[in-house]
Image (cartoon, rainbow, N blue to C red; front, side, top):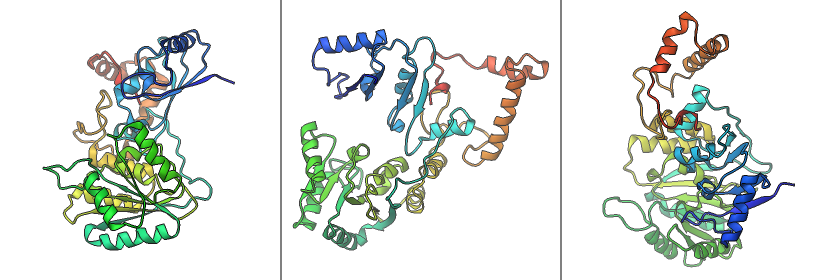
Length: 362
């Protein structure tokens, strides 16, 4: 069996699980010598001090939470050859989806729910419907279920008319005086967050008021309702990730998107998309159309609409035909030395050289 060490990143670029310098030095030596065959961790693995003798495979979960430059650090951990790379996400970011369209990234899709789970029912409700929504919460809690309520901000903003967590917690406490309520946000100490999460997991509290810190890594099968306040403030990827915190048990789960009446066109599109589908790739496709594909030759993960005619989100069939034609040319003439391929080769040679080939970083 391979040895495995869990590295915990504490926000200060330190390896918190290894408490002594000696332990860290031993681990690093084992990695460089190749006697450590498997390493599991978070952003701490990206530190320069973490070096491998012959890294052959990197698996990156929740890929959308890492920047391109961060991902490239793992790619560079083997000085001799680029390791095999597997990235996993429920909602591909626009740049990653664009790479799949260009054929630079092979894709496998798990499109089935685990056995016993039901598709999440998603609805959009306006603030004027809040009393009905709160009654639905009471009905669900009466059935023994639990509820998440997510807010986009921690403190009141003078420029943004959005719900914030502290006011939200107070209003929820007033609306449900008979219930126990947890609160979790990013400014809490780790011990405080763990304590509040443990209360919710043990069913000591019925409602959890939180920010997006619960977006990943939270698994409470008994939680069946996700209410997202000021849902227009969130991107499609965040909305889909938050929705995924429910629907983890056998009971029917619900995601309720709360907004005011004043919404932009893009906000309405995002909300309508969430109500219509649970499919992460369909959601990513809409996200690509709304935000742009990003820069495949750089690190920007959305935007950068620099194509004069083509539209990646609309011209999928033409792009597939172009990709097949390019692959046929390379199969016959990989060095592009034939006269009829001279223009292609000269154009490639004219492309500006960069210190890092970002186009290979998925």
